[in-house]
Length: 123
Image (cartoon, rainbow, N blue to C red; front, side):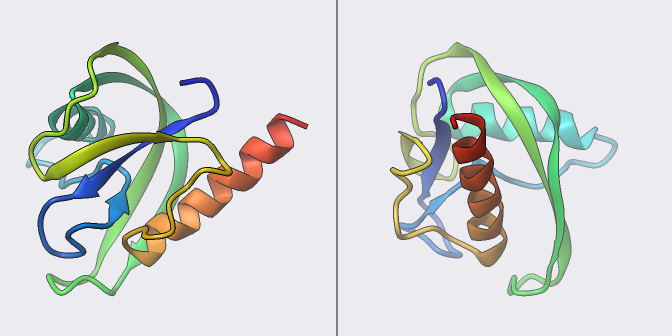
């Protein structure tokens, strides 16, 4: 997994069939970082350790209404990749291997930030 990130192919609307970072909603009284780890496990079968906050962005293009999306950096600490919950497929991608069919402008934006950071980190 060195230098790669995990994406899931969305099984449900909106944007069914496209690739996305594992994601979901924070439950009432749930810490956002705990929610990110929970959603990753539910969608990918992978246990992750949240490392730090990567990016925060407001969105207004969701049919359910506007919101805030929080992106965290994490590392896999256990589990086996297996699509679950709202995902139909799990994939690992390096900075130059990202698929073209990425869901949502906010995800495309944060993947561009990650890709540029990975290139700088590797030389």
